[in-house]
Length: 514
Image (cartoon, rainbow, N blue to C red; front, side, top):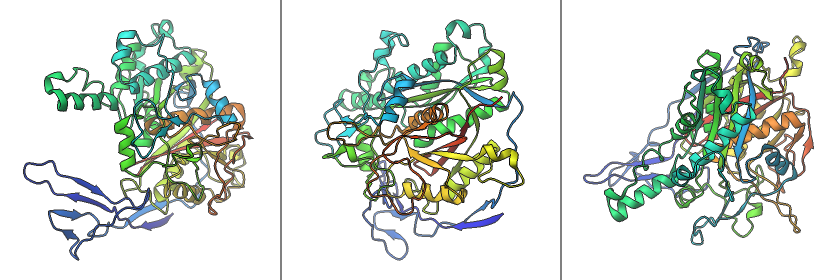
C-alpha cells in the first residue's frame, strides 16, 4: 500500500445571505472554461459579505492505493452473481437496441439544431434532441400529455427492458413482485414541469400552479411511476449524482440483489434537459461547446481543440437479475455485471482532480468488487481471461475532464497495449461532405445508454469509433478506436461516468460464462 497525497482548492465563492434576500452564488470555473478571477484582500475576504472557501487551503487528502491486487476471486454464488437479462432505451436514434448500436457502429449522427424552443438568441443552438418519440402502447394518452419528457422516456425504456427480459405483464403477475425493484435515477428531474410551474407562479400567481408541479418535478418520480405501472413492490427510489447517476444506480441495485433484498432490479437513468432552462444553465456553467458554425465537429474527446460537451437526452435501462433467478425462469442471459464502485473527488464542484486520484481509486475499487486484476499475474493463470481490454470512457470533451480520466486509467493499468477505449458521446456524421457529429451527453441518462453500448460491444465483438480526433493530446497513448469501428473481442469492460460535485462511478461487465 502506498499513501497518495493531494491538495485542493475549490475556487468557489459564497456570498453571505443579506437581510430580506435569498443571497447570491458565484463560482470561478477553472476547468471547464477560464473564469474571471475575483480579487480579495490578504484575509481572503472582500466587501459586501463575500467569503472565499479558498481563503484557507483545503486539508491534505490522503488515500491508500494498492500497488498490486492479490489474485481476486470472481463471485460464484448464483444468488450473488448478477446477470443482465434485458435492456431498453430511448435515444436520438429511436427506441430499438439493434438500430441504436448499428447507428453507433456506422457513425451516424443524432445532432441537430434545436427546434423544440427558439434558441436563436442562445450562444449554443444545437443538441442531441430527440424527435418523433412515441409512447404508444406504453403510456395512455391522458397521462402522456401531462408527463414531463423525463418520465415519458423512463417509462418507455423501462417497459421495453422488461419486455426484452420476457417480463411482460402476464408473467409479472405470476411472480413475487415484492422481490423486483426499480431504481432509475436522473440528474435534473422533471425540468420542464418545474419550469412551467415557476412560470405559472410568476406570471399568474400560485393558484395557477398545476397540482402535478411537485410530483412531476421531483427526481424519484421515474422509479415510482414505473413501479405503479407494473406493480413492482421491491426496493424503489432514485439517485441523483449528476452525470454519474445511472452507474450509481447500477452499483446500488447490484447490492440490493447481493444482499437478498431483490431478485430482479429495473435500473438505469433518464433525462430530458434539452429545453431553455437546461441549455441556458449549462451555458452559464461554461460547460458546452459553442461550435455553432460547425456543430458536427463540436464533440471531440481527447482532441487538443475540444471546447466542451454537447447536450443530449434519453433513457437507458437494464434488467439486473440474480443468476439463480434467471436460470430458474429460463431467461436469456445477455451479459454479466461483475462489480462496480463509487467515490468522490472531494475537490471542486465542476473541476476533476488533475491527478485523477478519485477516478483511479474508483476504477481500482470496481475491479476489486468484480474480482478482476488490473494486470495479468504469472502466478494466477486462471485469471488471465479476466483482464480488462475495453474502456467505455466518460470522455465528454471538456478541457480538464478528458485528460484526468486518461491519467487515472494509466495509473491503474500499467500496460494499456491491449486496451481499447472509446467515447459514446461523440459520433460521426455521414453526409456527402463527410462531416462528423455525435449523439450528445445524456447527463443522468448517459451511464444507462453507455452501459447498453458497452454490453452490445461485448455481444457483437465490434467497438464503435471515437471521432473528431484530428489532433490527439500526446498524453493519450491508449487506442481510442479513432474514426472507424473496430472488431475486438471484449474479455472484461469497464464503463466510466463522472458528475459535477466530484462523483465518480465505474461499473464492470463481461460476457456471461456459466
